[in-house]
Amino acid sequence: MSKCFFEGNLLKIDACGNIKIEEVEDMLAGDDDYGTANRYSQTIELAADRARYDECAKKLLTYKAVIAWILKSCTKEFSQYSVKFICDNCLNENVELSEHAVHQDQLNRDERLNGDKRLDGLNTEANAVKDQTVYYDIRFKATLPESKEPVQLIINLEIQLNDTPGYPLVTRGFYYCARMISEQYGTVFTDEHYEKIQKVYSIWICPDPAKKRKNGIFRYHTVEDSVRGNSFVKSEAYDLMEVVILNLGDADESSDLEILDLLNVLFSTTATPEEKKKRLNDEFDIAMTAEFESEVRDMCNLSKALVEQGIEQGIERGIEQGIGKGIEQKNLSLAKMMIEGNEPIDKIAKYTGYGIDRIKEIAEQMKTPVSV
Image 1 (cartoon, one colour):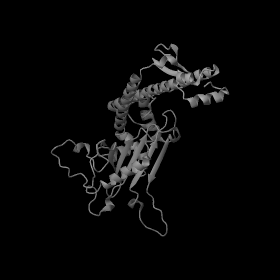
Image 2 (tube, rainbow, N blue to C red):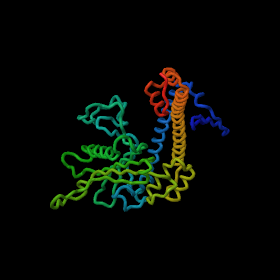
Image 3 (cartoon, rainbow, N blue to C red):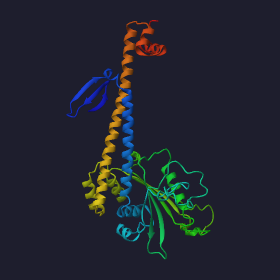
Image 4 (cartoon, helix red, strand yellow):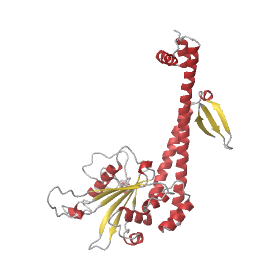
């Protein structure tokens, strides 16, 4: 049965669509403990579904066709190549999916729970191993072809369900870039061969940003600012990290940018799996495999569950707020009636729960003296 609060009454809508109206007073004796437990249960269920949705989203982004579209649209190094060329020639490395730890004092997934493995790989400058390890969502290397020697970019893709987490996403993106740069010492380069450092990207995809930020792509990178004179330094020497943020929009609205349209379809909470399959095939030349289609379907189901749970929580909160307003309105009406009836102020306070000052304030607004 669905419930909502409307003008001091509680509307109950049963499975058949019948509407019943109950006075707020009938709800005042409700079970607070049950309501609190129910809210906790809903919150836990919502968090679990969010985690499952996050995992599904990350898996979808590991498909070469999707990665190729992102590389072509979000990195200048691959913008000149076709999506097919990138798929066939530039993505030969394995993709890390929530395996590599971000912070220097935390273990990667393949290094954990192995009692025989020494911790030689840990940075000796670490202060302490944290209670909760943070992993890159997706990390892989992409190779630039047609150069004297293969040039690799290290790409980090992140799914961010909350685009306002309490800090600027771009700042966290640069932290991730800095970590990917520092991790190259001892593997990509040694001693003082800093010229071998590989450029890194941290690309953040926000499926549900605020309305004012929808359908936007923002790129942040290092540029030279010549104060005086010529440096003769090539951009490759300092353009080593770049953060890209993609704020998605609605699948049924064109954004004039193919990458946004593709991701809007992929992450849509309203499009059916069949609609997604058709659009991905017709508009982006992505043929769904059985596995890909299954994961799209799973994410659609989780999207629907998240929406329904969000609505349910919103209704519950609306009921609580409505009941609170109903109680206040009831007490205010009772206080005014008793003031007009020339009831003593102590009696008014007893029946309404108001303090003496509040009752006097109401009486002044009514321009009616209150009996002491």
